[in-house]
Length: 583
Image 1 (cartoon, rainbow, N blue to C red):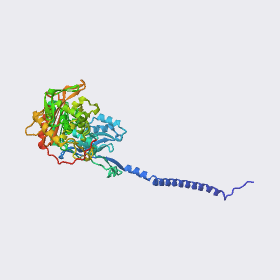
Image 2 (tube, rainbow, N blue to C red):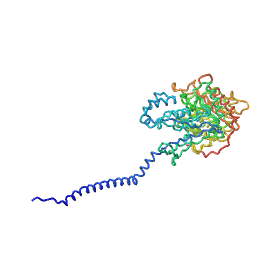
Image 3 (cartoon, one colour):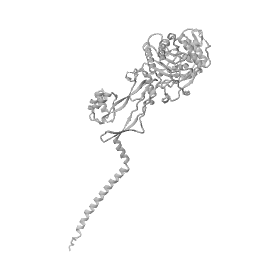
Image 4 (tube, one colour):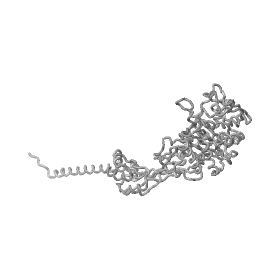
């Protein structure tokens, strides 16, 4: 018997399958929506800050704000160095579709070789930044903009070009700033931190069309523009010194020369020049030897200009007095194994005569009374073997051998300015000690040095009694001009004082002092009763002419500098100096 299907139950079973499928699909859709909602919640709460930062970065750009380097002025406010606002052009190689077309358009405007520019851009094809030209002229900036190059392929960066309104005047004192704005040499380097300032940051907010809609300075990195530095130099006196030094260079054609003018009472440097020189805006024209500032970066044996210092020190140590008498031994004096000579034979000499006649034999006898330890102490007190701290990059300390290396030769050589090396600035500062009444003072090139590299403390050390200094300056050093080695350059009516110096140059090829190579120098001041100006002129190995002595080569220029400068110089108000220090 066959079982028949129930007509009432079959349709019900068929209806359950679609319902199950519907429920399953709804569940799956619900899970998907729950997953999406969960992800949205996660993005909102967990990654909200990261997403906001990403969006902000797409809307904002951080730019460097260049600090403007400060100006450099002379003591009277005349501009020596300033900064001119310029534009520098860069390219974004990875955004350039056709580098040949870009190079062909830009090259002629910048006066660059198109093929070389194209090769440069190809070399940096994947880079986002490459300089094309630094500090270009305003007309070139406008010409580049008129090319209507594709947006994002190039840009301009604001920079500053250093300008020296006085040209090459005081070039060695000022130095220069390189293409990246870093000080090189002189005040520009020595005071770079003060002058350069500190770059800052600013944020640019852009809209969807890449237009800047807001600009604000980053609070944590504000720009700090460089400060103005006022020097002790006087442009008028600097011009005089450079003119006279250039004349020396032309007449005697030495390897080099330098001159420094100061107020000995304050030790403020009023002028400093070195030859050969250079123009700080034209570095491509430099001679190889022009960069050296011979006033501070060249050392030499000072010769007879050392003698007044040794005499003053011997008087301070009560080894000699104006009444002392020295015997000249007819121009030849045996000192141990060494035989010393004077240019002219002398008999009995007073202490003043030893200086006036520049007697080596007399100075050797003073050295014997001081002994080597006493001589070494004198050099130390007058600052030899130490940098003066004038604040110029490249200053040398000179050279003084350690005392244990001295011998009987040293006893005679040191008083004559041999067996030691000094810079012209060291010699000037030492003689300023005599001229100002006995205080060794740190030379100044900046009128307000409190914010510079030298700090706030200035050296002011008593070395020799005022009465001794007054006698040395007004008697023998004055008489050097009236009756001694400097008489041929004396000027009637001017109370000049000074000391000539002629030193032989040691020749390493013959391992002896040369008979033909000399350094000629002259230290001179005015007026003797109250010194207001002091100058040194040092000439390294003149190559033409005859009579290469300090009195012939250096002295005329030094006297001319004083003659022209003294009427123009007005002594500044005296400033108190801080207690003495010595490193």
